[in-house]
Length: 278
Image 1: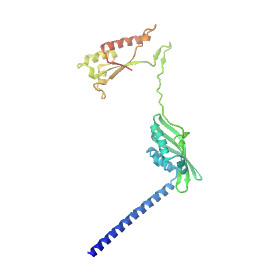
Image 2: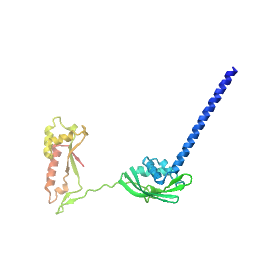
Image 3: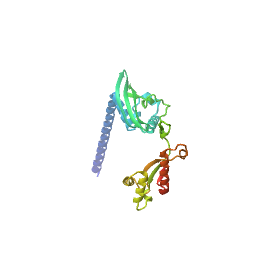
Image 4: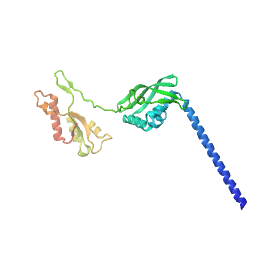
């Protein structure tokens, strides 16, 4: 009985010692790996570090970007504010396809200036600019990025905000030599059909409408059979300039306005619901 207890105790002690040794070996290996990685980062050149920074930017890994900043930069801005600042700007303009081509590296003492050409696509279209990033060498960690807001965009200050505004272009006007408008801003009517509201035998109707619009029945049927068309879809066939009542009562009424008015009257009387104002 006692011999069995002793054997059990020895096995327990042996297992515990083996487990402890395995844990110590694993911990030592992990610490060695971290030291090697740390030394690896310390030995990286500024251009390689900048490429890593851009790679993190492409992945929107702002936390990893913050870890590449030098000590003074991290004192100037907290990690939370850094992430918020970058995220708000890049997400706000819907930045994509971010690329940076290094054009030169200037080394001087413990400082390196990486010059680059940045390009990206945004809500405002493609954006491209030249810029530079300054790396300072620290004793324990190697080169680190000296960050400020101009790293995002040149001449950007910490109090500046970035936003995209879209201005809708207005259509210009074209006049003939007598001052009459040939093309310009105005109201138009879109002529079309709703398949679900057409009669079962729509052939004669389509043929008659084709005559009015100077379209062949085949071309109308082709538009009606488009893949996106449903029973309640309005299928536009032609856009007509809406006749202006003021112009129709003027002293000089153009033939186009007269013909347009007659055509629209026929469509409204015989084809109620096939016209839509744009």
